[in-house]
Amino acid sequence: MALSFEKKFISHCKKQNLEINPSQIDLVKKLQEYYEGNFQSLISKIFQSQSSKKGFYLYGDVGVGKTMILDFFFDQLDHKKLRLHFNEFMLSFHDFVHERKGSNQENIINEFVKDLKSKAMIIYFDEFQVTNIVDAMILGKLFDQIFKENIKIIVTSNTQISELYKDGLQRDQFKPFIKIMEDQSFQYELVIEDDYRKSNNSQDRYFFPLDEETNFKINKFFRTITKDKVKTEKIINVKGRNFKIENFYEGVARFDFKTLCDQNLGAEDYLEIIKNCVFIVIDQIPQFNNFNSNQQQRFITLLDIIYDNSVPIAVTSNQSLDKFTSSKLLEKPFERTISRLYELTSKVMNHETRIF
Image 1 (spheres, rainbow, N blue to C red):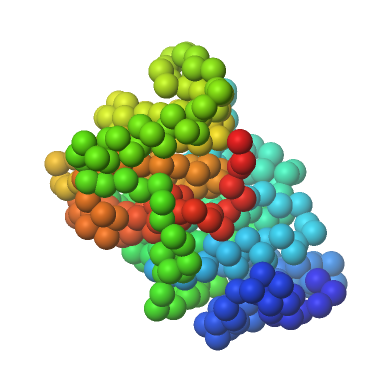
Image 2 (spheres, helix red, strand yellow):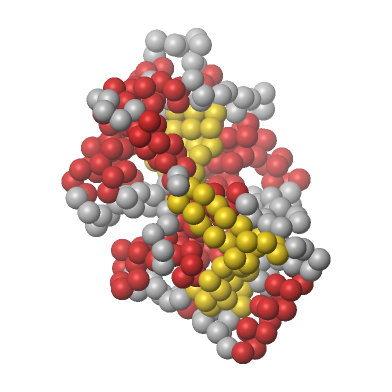
């Protein structure tokens, strides 16, 4: 970086007419230290680089600007790098394992990480969370090898490392990963009072309550955005499983919530669905509680993937966004989902909204 990261960030904020917050400036200074310790010294202090902390773990409440700052930092790096959704990353690992059935697990992890190293010196995981017991059990060995190969990891999350996978099934098997991440990472909490996604956006694609008037509005909206588009029945195949999109108009798709979240669908299914869509309507999102937590978890995964791919949406529900309830186990990650719903259903999205 020719200029300091702090100067570049301040210049970027001024050009974009963004508020310059003291807490965010403090964070960019920490990122500068992390960069200097891991990249600028890499050639001159090659033999000392193994002792540097290779991870930067940024956590804080939703809407405080974590992703915006790490996106900007990541864009400045001219090293080999990857930005991955965590679900996508774990799917690639499980596919790698599946292709090498019968191999020793430790050997597979080593092979996977060596392949990863050929692609990137640094990997960025936005909104890191662990909900799957299979992933929880393997992450310790996987990330231990990643750090041993001197691959850097930067992460955003809504919770500190020690709180990851809290109350999860067989959490004791997850503790080695927690120790590795705490030992290998600079951990920083970004604290800002306001959720920028809520304050900066004016919603016009969130329709409630579920009544005749709302039904009329969403149908009219859908007719408008599909005008002159041809309706087809889209079949998506994911590893031999067929998923049918019945209301598909040249990339504009409409689903009932149950179609997407009552079925046994996962991240790989949602990724394939989203690849085919430029705009999505989701009808009848319910309230969530301990009895439909499986559906809620799928919805969280779905929204993460929609957001990560910058696909605008319209939704219908029976209550306003600030009145949603949650299952106890998913309260923290669901805060992020609600915040992202504010942005995804607003007139102006901060992500690069696809225009169709």
